[in-house]
Length: 150
Image (cartoon, rainbow, N blue to C red; front, side, top):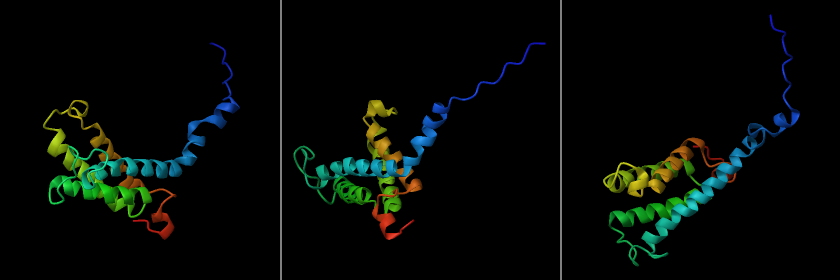
């Protein structure tokens, strides 16, 4: 029979510095930060289509009555609502749907793989907005300011 060795005690510094006890407490604020950054970068795509800014679409803005024009409106105003954290869940739901439609109307026909069909950002936006539908805006938002939980 082998002798039993004493069980090592966890180092105090490891307990104090674990990611779950440090970073997790900032999750709501990091969610707000992510929401603002994603809303800003998303709205830039809308500015290209809606206003023709940042190079536009071939140097022009999209025709408002076209699918690209409609996408420009959704991206411009949806991005603004996401930045503000106003009506975040329903807005994120609409934007998630828009990105899913964009992926399956445009990118999937080039290749199944997002890396090869240039649909990586579309997939990332889609699933980020899906997550925001479930998670909500976070504490730095107009939703919280007005007490809107839905």
